[in-house]
Amino acid sequence: MDGVQGLRAWRWLLVIEGLPSVCLGVFGWFFLADSPETAWYLSPEQRKILILRGTRNQREAFTVSAGTLHRADIIAAVKDWKIWAFSLFNFGGDIQLFSYSIFLPTIIQAINPAWSVIYVQALTVPCYVLSAIMYFVSAYASDKLQHRALFGILGSLVSIVGHIMLMAGRDVAVPYVGCFLIASGLFTVAGIALAWLPTNLPRYGKRSTAVGMQLMIGNSAGIAAPAVVSGVLWWAMANINKRRAAGEEDWKMSGLTEEQIDELGDESPKFVYTT
Image (cartoon, rainbow, N blue to C red; front, side, top):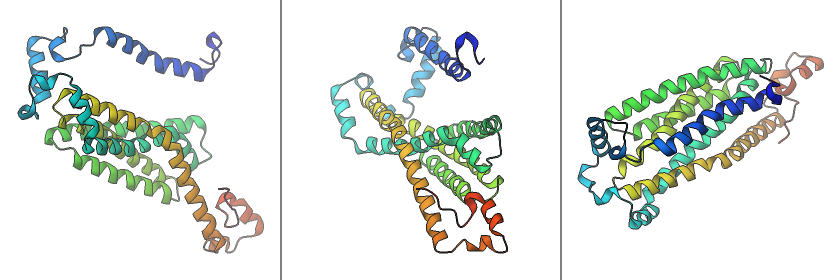
């Protein structure tokens, strides 16, 4: 669609991806109900089921008053250390999420610079497909067991293993498989963080305030993510420079001519990264 209506292809990509969200947002403003009780598009039986689901873990603490907004609940949410902990949990997960979503094509390109841009973009798709599958599996299992923490921990561990493979892998397969593990873990962590908090807050006012705090703090990770990535790159390159200066990579030059050493590019022990 490059050139259609005078717009470049990347502009059309933003239009096509953003238009459904804009339209659904307008539709939701006028037609999406605020609660099961006011959902005109549900039958009485469906409304009853939704209400029971919403309070199935909170029946002991749920009252009519708890279902309305009170200033005291807002203040209680701000003072609750657990809500701040959940927000930091979400912040940590979102740093991973934003970094991965933005830099995945660049990461895959670095695995093999010979790959074309289109090929690299195609290689990102399987990572997201697996992450979507794991997301739904984790959501189902977590809800079935009525347990959240374990899935958050397991997701974090899987993601850590993926990062290790990405950084330590020397061939194409290992770091690329690492990208799959990172996606599987980080999206699970992000989803668990958002699902865990509301289920522990039966009062409407406190729950609404807590979710707003969590999303605000979590989304601010987008500001920190580039700094974190830059910091990691700085540390990694400085560490490589230090090892090369100490002669720990001189073995790579064994038996090679000067021309062959120069052909190694940035893998050459003589190459010094700019930090």
